[in-house]
Length: 390
View (cartoon, rainbow, N blue to C red):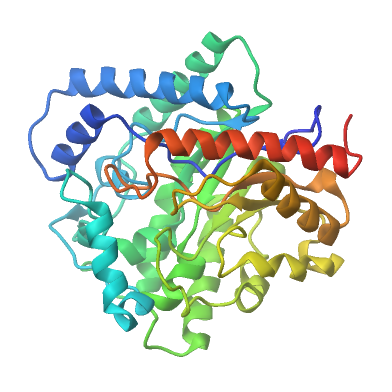
C-alpha cells in the first residue's frame, strides 16, 4: 500500500456514479442489444476522466476510473471470458425474504430506469477461459493516460477485479460437474486480469463480497460449516491466481451486500476471519460504517487479528443519502486506529461502491461527492487528533 505523506490516506471501494447516457449504452449491451462501440468507447473515456477529476477535487488520495467501462463489478467479464450465455436467477437475500416490505422498498428505490439487474446475470454454459488480455490492458493504459493528464495530486491508483467466488455465485454454473471445479476454472481465468493490473503498476483490488454475502444468499439454507468450506475454496483459488504478485500490491474488499436492508442474517466478521485472513493480500477493505458492522472494529484490538496487514475500514456508508459530518468520520477513524494501535496501518474508505451495477444506485450523484468530501475532511481531522501528520 502507498506510504502516507499527509496523515491518514483516503480511498473508496471502486464504483462511482455513471452518467445516464453511459448507463443506457451499458444496459443495452448487457441485454444483448447491438450498440455503437465507438460511441461506447468515447462515453467510457469521458466518464472516466470526469470521475477521476471529481475524486481529486474532493481530496481522495488513492483513486481509480470509477469502473465506468463495466456494466457491473463482475458481469462485465462475460465480454472478456468464454463460456457465458443465457440468463440465471440469483437467490434473494435471506433478510429481504424475512422482511418482504424491505424487498419492495428496495425495488421502489431502484426505480424503473434502465439498470443492470444482477439477480438475472448470465450463466456458465461452457468452458470458462479468458479470451485475451487486450481489454484489461486497454483499460489500464487508459487509466494511466488519464492520471498523467491530471499532473498529480493523488497518492496511488487502484483497479478492481472480482473474486472467482462472486462470479460463481452470481453467474450460475450449468457446465462444470461441481462448484469447486467452476471456482477453480474462474480463478485460473482471472489470473490474466490480476497479473495485468499488477504489471501495470496499479494496486489490485479483489472484490469479494461472496466471502460474506453468500452466507445469506447462496448458502442461506445450509450450515455455517458448508459456507466456510466455500470460503476456503475461494481463498485457495485467489491465492493461486495471485502467484507472483507482491502481497503489498493487493487489497481485498469483503462486504455483506451493498443494499439497504435489515442485514440481520449477516455472518459475523469473527466467523469468517480465520478463512479470509489466509488470502495473500496486504490490505483488507471492510464495511464498518453501516449499523450492522460498525462494532466489529473491536476485533482488531487483538494485535494477532490484523497481524502486519493494512486495514481499510469503511467509514462512509454507501446505501443512504445522509452526508456524514466530517467530525463523525473522524470519530470512526480515530476509534478504529486506536483499536489497531497504529494509525499508519489505516486507510479510510467506504463500505462499498456507489453504483456496483450500471443504473443501480441508492445514493444520488451529488450526494456521493459530498460524502467523499466528508471522508477527506474527516481523515484530516483524525490525523491531527491522533498526532499522525508527517
